[in-house]
Length: 128
Image (tube, rainbow, N blue to C red; front, side, top):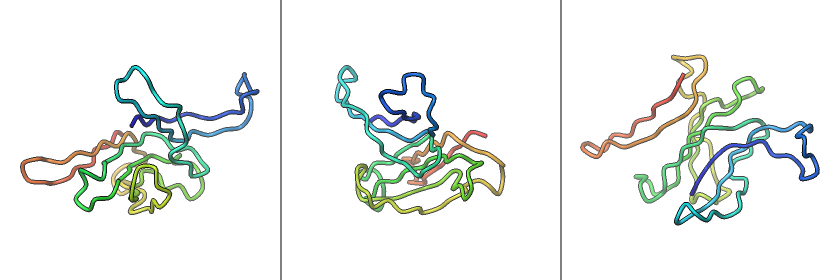
């Protein structure tokens, strides 16, 4: 699966004049030559960018974990947040944690999640 963020506009809005905000989209490929049409994966009503996904097959609890950045200036923003759900395309994602790293930095983005294969510890790296 390929995830990326983009603002969406009606097809007839060729100059992108309408109000919009970034959403996370997903497309699929097996060969990086052909790609399925993109569809919305995450839409919280305000800008969400920079998503990284831990597939269920790699997660210790067998769930899909998403780490994303929501527009920090939006009212009630989750900022950098963690969600878990049953499958990438499922609609049962729940917020596990929000405003990650707020105790250290005002604004973070670009989450990167990986597991240390020696001891099994999971790490979340962010850009500030």
